Length: 90
Image (cartoon, rainbow, N blue to C red; front, side, top):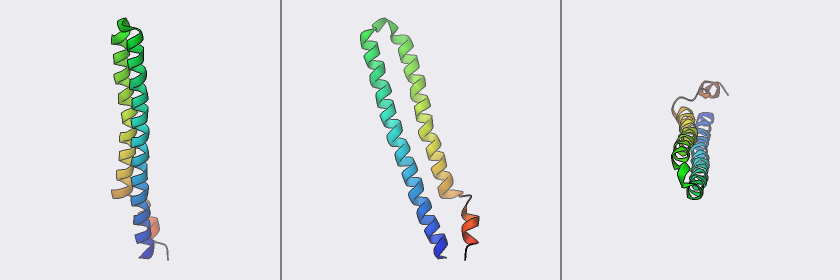
């Protein structure tokens, strides 16, 4: 029973760190992308339409990485495939 409790504790910590690191990385990447896009729009106002559409696409792709990390965290928490190996340990 001790192994199962330790396994669940480590799983909760791993899920928490996974989503925390993914959100921090996604937020910093989105900030850099938005800052670069606004700087480019300030330099060339006539290219605003193309820059704006590229910015929206890149922000969606960056956000998808955070959503993948959320999916992995939820799998670790609720449908952990390694749980069957832990209960077999003495």
